[in-house]
Figure 1 (cartoon, helix red, strand yellow):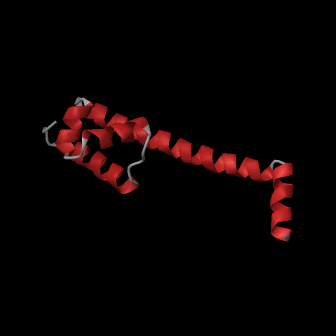
Figure 2 (figure 1 turned 135 degrees about the vertical axis):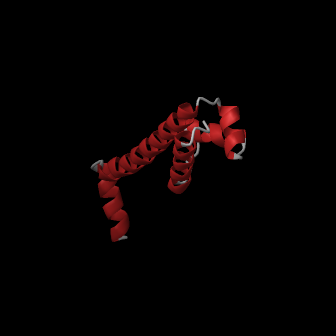
Length: 94
């Protein structure tokens, strides 16, 4: 019961709502950053979304969702794709 009172007090004072909003805002910001980074990587190749999806061997819809920020690619996937693009550009393959 004391836990419930604490939550109600937090809501009444705006603390719980503020923390919840901050967590959501942080998650949304991270999604936007990843989406922007992914679009930047693709733009470095000069490929459109369909070509880039085929190049990577991933479904077009997945790539589209990542770029729009609807879903978030895991960080390691983003890093691997960036490394692949960098490596291919250095070798003149892109």
